[in-house]
Image (cartoon, rainbow, N blue to C red; front, side, top):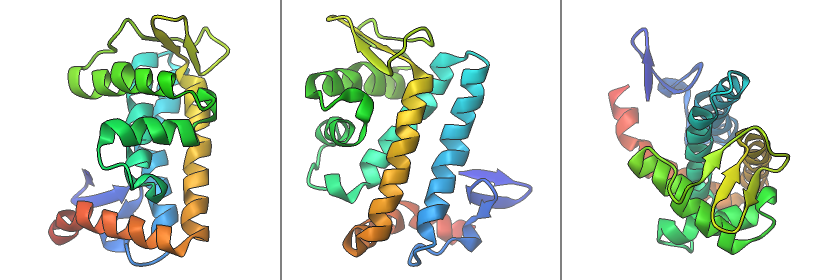
Length: 185
């Protein structure tokens, strides 16, 4: 969480006291959270050619989307849910499960758990595709990945707006995850 001048924020400019998980207003507030804490800072880092740092933030956002997307709730283990979400929601992976699994192991797990990209993977702005496999390792363009994740975030928000059961599942998960934060405001 981010506390600024004594106020605990759910998202930039949105204090926890203004968040009502049980209202449909949570949808744009959650989008503001992901955009403000992850995607916009990643965009700023890309502009400075800090591709590694930008990539970490983008992947953290992907992690959150895969965690909260009710369409993937059936996958109880994260190692299954994240790649399936990538296959289903990220156009740049073109439905390729092998590349999605490789991305999960090398980028997501490497960056989140070990502060490195495993399996010789790399970030670069020098490729015209978001994800490129040379057969043995992946090369990821964080700028193009950012565009794809932004599209996935908008699609996620659309699902929540159009599917009442998805919204209810999402709200329940947020309630579980953030309950303590609402008590300490």
